[in-house]
Length: 319
Image 1 (tube, rainbow, N blue to C red):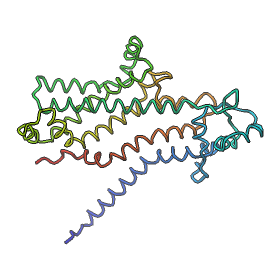
Image 2 (cartoon, rainbow, N blue to C red):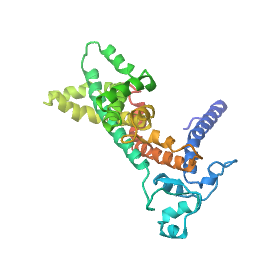
Image 3 (cartoon, rainbow, N blue to C red):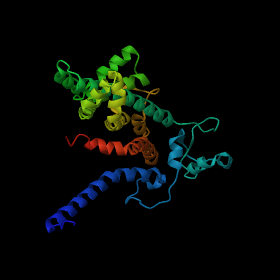
Image 4 (cartoon, rainbow, N blue to C red):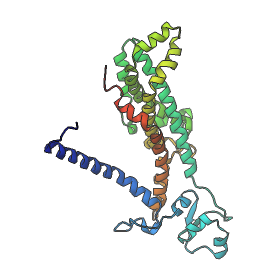
C-alpha cells in the first residue's frame, strides 16, 4: 500500500522539483544560446531584443572551415555561378569571399586545431587513466612506506594554478624542443591528470574485495593475471568515470595550450577566440566553432553515461 504524503512532504517535493528545473534551465541556457547562434544569419546574431525564431543557415560553418577576407563589393556573376552550393550560401550574405589569388576554396585552420585537440586529449586520457589505475592498484593492495606522504605529494601537483607554472614550463619546453609539439602537450596533460586519476581510481579499487584476487591466486593465477582478469573488469565503472573527467579536463584546457603552442600543435580552445580579430567579429562563426567543440565531450559522456552514473555512487554503500 502506497504511503500517504503529508502536506509538508508534498510542498518540499514541489520545491525540490522547481529548484532542479531552475538549475537545469540556467545550465542549459548558454548551450542553447551557442547552438542557436551557430545557425543564425550574421545580422541576427547580436540583435536586441534577441531573435529566437529564425530560418537556420549553414553559412557560419562554411565560413568556419574556409579562409576568408573582407570584400567591399559582392562577387561577380561569373564567380557566383562557378561556386559550389555551400559557398553560395555565404555569397548570398554579401559580406565575405574566399581568400585566394586563384579563386579556389582554401581550408581554414580550424580542422587541424580540432584534430590536434582530439589527438592530445585522447592520448593523454589513455595514458593518465592507465598509469593512474596501475599506481592506484599498488597503493591499494600493497603496503608502501610513506604511503600517505606519497599520496599527498601526488595530490599537491594539482594545488597550483596552471598560470603559476606556465612560464617555467614554457622555458623548459623551449630548451628541450618540446614547445609547439603534440608530445609536449600530451606529457603535460598526462602529468596534470595523473594525480586526479590516481586518487579517484584508488577509491574504486579499495571497494573491490581482496578475496577475489586471493581466490584467483589460489587457483594458480599470477598477480598480473589476477589484475587484468579480476580487478580491471570490476573497476570498469571507475575507469570510465575517471576517463570522462580526464578527457574533459584535457579537452577544455586553455592556458597551457595558449602558451605552449603556436601553430603546429595548437588546439581548438586558444584558436576559437583568436577568430574575433580586430574588426567587427563574426559571432556566428565563433559560435559554430564552439558548438562543434562541444560535440566530442557530449558524445563521449553520453556513451559512458551508465558507467558514469554508477561510478558516482560506487562505494557509497559498504557491506
